[in-house]
Length: 638
Image (tube, rainbow, N blue to C red; front, side, top):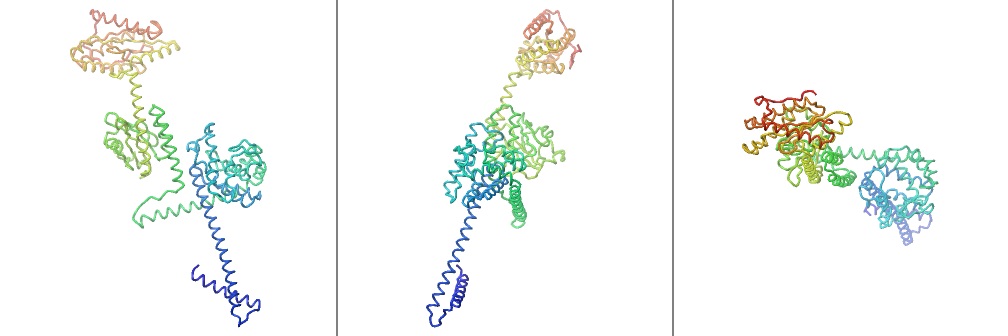
């Protein structure tokens, strides 16, 4: 006690002593001991009263501190589950008001107050992906979820509350008909607090729209609960809810509104302080995030990273992989546009683009070392809050990038080195933080490996059906296409012509000029074949110097005319490479259905006729205008 307090106590004691003496009329001036005795009695009484008042205040302060601690812990638990504080407040208001209407004893009311806040503490033992999983859980997942009641009771039992919180938390998922968990209690065996909590938890979930459900009006939610009266819920409680639901919701809404107003006022104060801070201390530090946001973000990050690690390795389709990445990544790192570039021929080509400026970003070809993404690819280092205008292709027109103001870019390094770059663009300036960069760097190796594997699979898939030298379809692809084309012809009663082409004199050119020049001739001739074909014709390389054309609807006369044109294309390719007229072309063709109805028969007949043509060339029975220059010529109309 302070000196001032001691002085005031002495003065009060003197006044009380004088009052006692006058009241009892026992003041004897010549009897000092009696005066001292009265003084001591008065002092003792006042000190006792003061001590009792201080003790009461301390107990109240301790109780308030205890409840605020419980509330803070409860809000943190809700944040872990990505739930709003609205739900928690509704559960508390509904539960306490039902308890008051049932006239529960004070200790049960305190237990209900605490249990309403901490009943989900056991969910700390439930994996994040189960707590936040949309839709129905599997049987195994449901069994794992059920442990939260037992775990929660065990956690709270160690606290040793002076009122019965633990039985309420343990039994708040019991059902009136005995089919609940964890103990299968039935009817009156279930603690009243647990019965109340079970009903109001379900009611608040529907009203606040928790777990992705649409918000429901209070009367509709109560009627849904009434359908399970006597099964899941105590009929007495359902009757009370039906009678007082609007009153309960009015009180809960007022409490929720008050909390939101307090939070808004707090944020406004923080914004004013953060706005004044740079002017006062010369620094522009970003305001610290709300602790609930931090908790929720941490759990969301862990869950999302787990999902991405599973999803990224589940597909070898690059578009599918990057599409899944885009959806998952948006939860953690905001972006207006996302572009995944892969390295092709010393430049970055967009493999996947999502979001704003889709067409512009998809048209980019970024040389290594240039722009944001090119610099990142060359130097293998990230860029934070770069200027999107630096990307090549947009520099010439500043208006084209008016939407995007900042970018974050990381290299994607696989087992074979850098395979590409992941760049996120945002419409706000300086939109990205060090935390965003940390998240991207965490997933970069997994993304890079997935991209590398998908590209390797694409190359392997392409090589299985594509000729490596000419980039034409190979024999395998030819047979697959021819089978489909013949099936179409049978359905439509149409015709298709198969032309087999073989270069004459090609071995002699290889011997005289070398295989490199021979390969060059094959590439030039293959390109000429494609250019001279109709868009719906199919050109393939069977192997060596043999090519096949599948031409739907081409007539006999048109095929014969076309054979002459193809021979001229072959001679032109020989002259372009070797300045020699040695090269020519033998062509045989067969028409479905006249010459056969399956691929093997058609190819065999066309091949037989091609060798007859080759023999006539060898015997000098067939000749063409060797000197005629042929650049490009299309099929005559059949």
